Amino acid sequence: IPQEGELLIIQGSGKDKMCLENLVDHPVIAQNSESYYLPDDILEDLKSRYNEIVLFYDNDEPGIKAMEKQAELYKCNFVIMNGKIAKDVSDFYEIDKDSLIEELEEMNLLK
Image 1 (cartoon, rainbow, N blue to C red):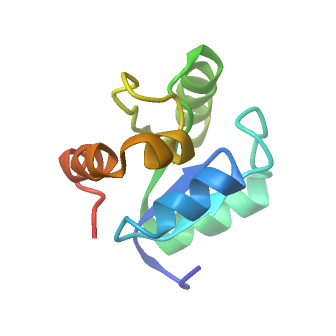
Image 2: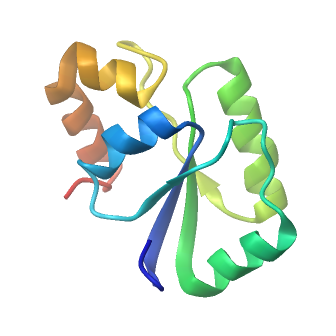
């Protein structure tokens, strides 16, 4: 990822990261899972390099709960997909890429 920037997106899985990073205008990293918590030293390093960090996990109960808890702990924001088509980015991409692009545009994340 770049040394610094305006926005860093944290995804909960590698497959979703790969789909998302081809569409958005910001760097994307992936954790081992949505329930994984970033070590304090890594979080502080990322916060010093990026103006904003956004969590973007699955749109299901475990994903939303993880984002809510981590956003409070990390003092950052999160975004939630509509969820009517799929619960995660990679499924959404496979089912209806055009609708995913529209949703990312509404979230101001699109390239």
